[in-house]
Structure formats: structure tokens, C-alpha cells
Length: 435
Ligand code: GDP
Image (cartoon, rainbow, N blue to C red; front, side, top):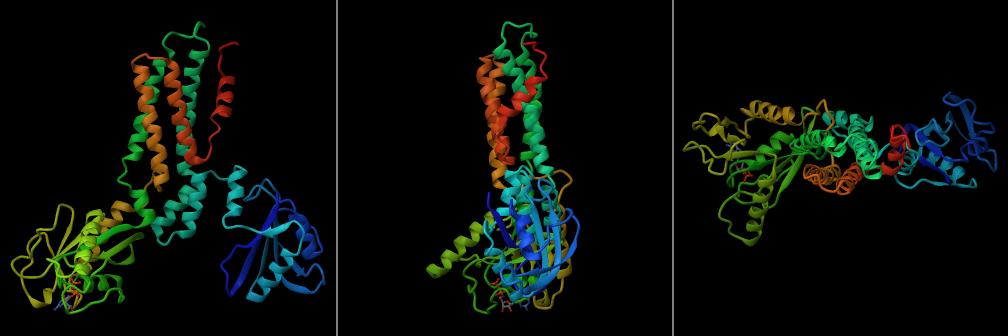
């Protein structure tokens, strides 16, 4: 195993920079740069870093050593907290690269080693990545929880129960004539149905965890010139979309990212919906419709007069009449605003916050955050259904066992733990079959 190093903080000028090393040659590297061993693990030491060849001083900073396996990667790890100047970082990296057996880390390689050494499961790795990418408060809460193992524990708990059930099924297959109470496999049915119900409930989550991770899609729709771009600009607090007095200028889908009460929102201004004149505009309308169709929430805007036209609106949409400054009535259940004067925008923002924030904020229980999880759980549920059928029909126990094995594997793929056979050995050991 090679020893790897990398700049773990962002590149560029800063107060400090942290270089991280992991692998079997960490102690040697520390000695080469500081002239001393790493000292006791987990104790900070002020060190002078020198060029190993010339002994010229490179910087003075803090040294932190973690002895494997009690480290992030499970290997020996050292951190050099140095000054965050470009030349300092460059000189230190140059010195490290000249040491034998050391090389620059590939992207994600520290975390990969942590996974391979059993320090993190795959859901925790994803949680870590999401935490680094988190832009809003609710995203941070969700990512931190996943990084700390909430999702992985849920899945591993299911997998352990499943493998126990599987062990019973196998016992009956392997020792059919033994004094195992008859119809043991039938006794599995309640446990399998309970597991299947828990997984189904977990899957039936309105994709909220995924929405929170990716951003909730909000589409602004309405006829040309209703003020969609103006409203988007108002909400975004900056000039994000082109506002023009000529109808049909918003030909494509423009979007801005908003942080609504901790929930990330992608607000999309769609092309005006009308009988399109040109081909380009027709394409804009097609995209607008597709986008609006897929959106989690839609703001339907009408121009004032005649009570507004909300023929496009469906249940759950927020209905808005814009250009309130020009006068006109606001029908009940409709929000009156003026993108020009800002009138009514507080209420619109509050409505958005309520709808988005309440629906998508991080939950108490862990949520599915990626399609990968959903696919694994779907496979697991399908295998469960087949196993349940086989058991109910009192068909061949081996068929049911095979499906349970597939279900366990599907769960194991989500966490990255696919060692079904190892677990079976462990579980078999506390079976009182007496053989
Ligand atoms: P879109 O086609 O729906 O995106 O509409 P725009 O945002 O481009 O606005 C069309 C025209 O209406 C522009 O001239 C805007 O300045 C104007 N407009 C937008 N909102 C208001 C408003 O609240 N009051 C008034 N008086 N004019 C507005």
C-alpha cells in the first residue's frame, strides 16, 4: 500500500492549510520533514518543517499524528497544519513528492481507504460527500446524520434480521429430518412481512431526502408578460433573468438557486405559455411545460383583470396575480403581488417558505437521499415479495432462501457490505442444531 498525501484544505491563499498523509510510510515522512518521530498519537506538536535534502526551513506549524487503525483511514495518518501561502504549500508538496514511497492522493482516496478499511460504509461515505457539498442548513443536518451512520444502521439492521431469517430457512434445508419444529419456514413469514412493510414505508417518502439533497424544483408558469422573470428576479434578489417588455423573450428555462428556510430551491422561470410564433419559442414552450410538469411546486401567475386566468393551475399550485400596482381584483385563494413595487412579496415568500420548508426539512428518521438507495431497496422489496409468495405457497424452501439471499445482497450493496456468507457463519454458530 502506497503512502498518499494531499492538500486537504482549499487551494489558494489562507491563514492555514492542512496537508494530510496516510499510509505505512507516514512515520518516515514525518521524520524526514521534522527530524523527529511523530510522537504520541493525537497530541499536537509545534514543529519546524525542513526540506529533507537541504535542511532549509520550509515553514513552522502544527503536527498531528494518528496511529492506525485509530484514524480516519484506518492507516497511520499525519496532518501538517502549515501557513496557507501558495509558496509554502508548494514547497511542502514538493518536499513530500521527493520522498520514496509517497505519491499524491487521487480524488477521494483518503475516504476510499476509510471505506476499504471498514471505517465508513458507503452511505456514510456519501453522507460525508454531501456534507462537504451542503449549501443549506437542512442539507447539512441530513448529510451529517447520514455521515454518522443513521441510514447505514437502518439498512444493516434490516440486513441482520433478514440474514437471521435466512439462517432459519437454511437450517430447515440442511437438516430437514431433524427435530426442528415443523414448518419453520412458515414461521419466517411474519418476520419477512414485517421487514417488507418497514421497507415499503421507508420507500414511500415522497422522495423528500432526495429533493433536499438535489434541491426542490419550483417552476414559475404563466402567459407571456405576466411578470415571471420580474418575479424571479425579485425573489432571487438579483438580476438573474432577462426582463424585457417584448413578449416571448424568455425562450428557455432560466433558474436560480434559493435558500428557503434552510431548504435548497431551484426556481425556474419558464417560457411564456402561449401560441408560439417561431420555432425557437415553440421549443421554449415545450421545455417550459416539461419543466412545470416535473416541478415539485408551481407558481402560476396571471395578469390582473377578469379574475386572472388560472386554467393552467392544478391542485397544490400557488396562484398569483401580478402587477397589483396597476389595480384589479384578487380573487380568494390567490396571492396578489407586484414584482415592480414589491407589494405582497412578503406573503408570497412566507407561503413558499411554509410549503417548501415544512415539506422538505430534514426529518427525524433517516431518509433515502440517492436513487442508488432507492434501487437497492426496490430490488430488496421485489425479492421479499417472491420469498413471501414461496413461503405462503409452502413451495420449495430453497427457492425462498435464494430470494432472501438476493434481498440481503441488495441491502448489502447499499452499504457496501456484501459479506452475506460470513454473517451466516456467525449466525449459524449460535444455532442449537447440535451438529
Ligand atoms: P414574463 O414574460 O412573464 O417573464 O414577464 P416579464 O417579467 O418579462 O415582465 C413583462 C413586463 O411586465 C415587463 O415590462 C415588466 O417590467 C412588467 N412588469 C412585471 N411585473 C410588473 C408589476 O408588478 N407591475 C408592473 N406595472 N409591471 C410589471
